Image (cartoon, rainbow, N blue to C red):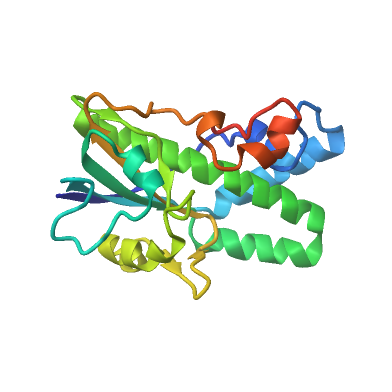
Amino acid sequence: MNQSERCIVIEEVNFEEALRYLGYGKNVPDDKTQELLLLCAKQLKDVMEGKFIYKVFDLVDGQIPNSGFRLQGKAIQKHLKNCNKVIFLCATLSGSVDLLIRRKQITGMAEAMITDSLASAVIEQVCDKAEEIILKDFKGYEHTWRFGLGYDDFPLDCQKQFLDILDAPKRIGVCVNQSMMLTPAKSVTCIIGLGHGLKNTSKKNCDMCSFRDKCQFRKEESTCGRF
């Protein structure tokens, strides 16, 4: 079992994905919105602390021996078919981002919404970089896309045990509340499978998504930017 934690610096915010979260689709924001995007991105980068922690476990018959953690649900079992290792990953932008968004909710909802969308884009960028760093140690393996806790029929009430296994509350400050939501809010928990002859590609696509039938992006002939 490998374990590590690291900090991640994001130099360039993914504005295109942030605009998707804001519902712009293929539309171009006006000059005022672009000014706010630049302002909010600078303020976000000034306070955020991108961090991640992970552990790698052996996978035997669809479960993780001696961990006490059960991989429940048909979706995660299908996702990890032919995998013999799994990566538990948690990433966060830290509590300072939550505080920034709350302050903006008081002073101006437009900036609050923009900052929230920018932060949602950036936490995905942190996860992308974390995945890239981790997979350098597993070049001989194929890997799956990141499967988030609570996705499909993988129960969200696994969050606390997942975080405890990673020691995430102590090491990077990520906890879970009574509603099983992560704090800080701009945090992610997910599982990546490692193996050979995998059925799942390393990239998720719309056909795999549980929300494809009610996705607003698909109605607009677009995607959420993650696929």
